[in-house]
Length: 131
Image 1 (cartoon, rainbow, N blue to C red):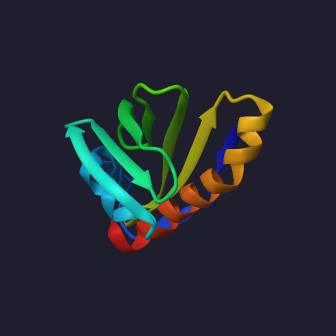
Image 2 (cartoon, rainbow, N blue to C red):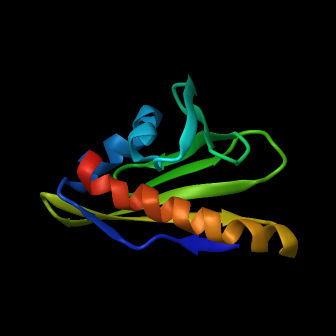
């Protein structure tokens, strides 16, 4: 299953946007309002939970400055990744697209597609005000 957020324009350079997304603490600022828990576990790992959903631990798996950040599931039963693709528009603005990818059975995919789509759209939508 592959889900993509709409591309979001940010009034910061690609490097500044990359630096913001490289610091896992900053993801707390991007979370939806229905977040019930956020905790930084290590420099490159954090845990979060949305109301009514299980806790999810994400770990930074790959960082290619200034264009790509990959967060992946750290433990748990589900294997998935959340990739931030950063494109430079000019020296003072960039564009970000979030891509969620994971292997799920048909029933699980059907259940999580809506909530995950909404989640990555919210993360991307909150970026311009926070980065």
